[in-house]
Length: 81
Image (cartoon, rainbow, N blue to C red):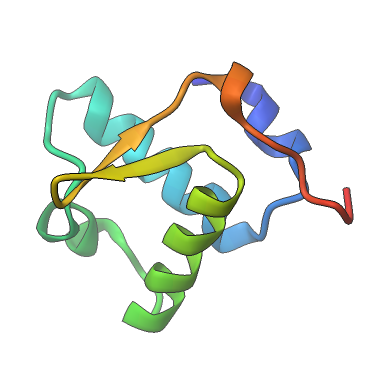
């Protein structure tokens, strides 16, 4: 896990989603909604917003219905951080 995730100025939900995605990826589990939802403890709308935030900051990309973690060199900081 890259600790830089805590320095990007992301919401708590977006950081939490990153941690879930990192764990799934480490365990070689596809980064798809059906794998994420059992681990997600907030409303589905919050999951959608967290995904959008991670995409906006280039932490993840969407590819063929899956999320793909990008290397930290591609990430962009929040303008408010």
